[in-house]
Length: 330
Ligand code: BTN
Image (tube, rainbow, N blue to C red; front, side, top):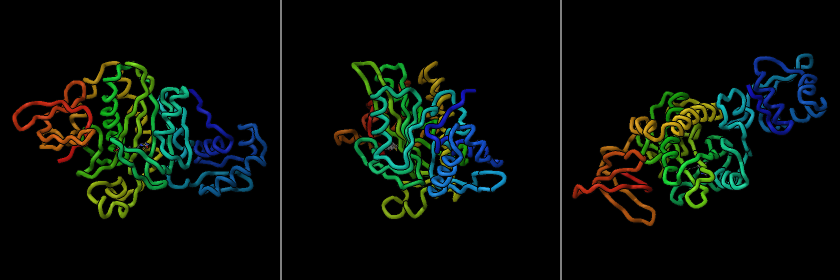
């Protein structure tokens, strides 16, 4: 198995502590493993403690990680990650403007397929169709995944639908909640939105250079955050089940599921994913309003998606229109 080495000594110490949570690790052992002084180990442990990690220190036995502060961290995502490639390179920072913006820059600089950009606090989160995406520190997942598929540009929206299936499956695995998907990719639980997905492209003529998939998941957001205007429109896993979720673990489960579906998709095409999306579709068969970029609004019945993932809308007069990009409501 490939050993994934966390960058930076402090991170590497954290990684060792995660991997050895069931027992104590002496300062000497850590310094040997990481080829650094025991003073450096002590200094980094003190920094981690100041950041909110509870680390038990016993003079004769060494250090043991008891708990981590709320939110995600690189070491926790890497420890026990079961993917072949996705998420092996993680760009993590406590605070970012937008993981999407950072991932686009990194992709421009040649970041490899599977690189994951993740933060605990996003101050300028971007949503679909120019919307702003709001998140609260340490309680949401804000991440962007860099992919480099060999696909014609017109097929890339299918990756958005695939992502929605992977997120909904991961949520079901960790929480038991069966979520539905509002076309193309909002994840809903009883009509309240739990997840937003934003897919952006870097391309040269008809050739895809990179696809950046941005995902925001309301994990441990407190129920009170969704009062007033947001009540009924947005919710979180915690607000629904009352449980507190390990967000790093949810990311691991998502990456594993995404990788399985992505491999299947690259091999067999969208027809291998379509039934999984349709099984969770919330909008099909409903009378909907379609708000297209530029403000044009259409009404009709959502009768399905075609084999390319495009929404089929039956208008009053029976005419069927294809919808490629829009916000829908009912
Ligand atoms: C939507 O409008 O529903 C899509 C929201 C996408 C939000 C995510 S959070 C991580 C990534 N970074 C961003 O700035 N946006 C996406």
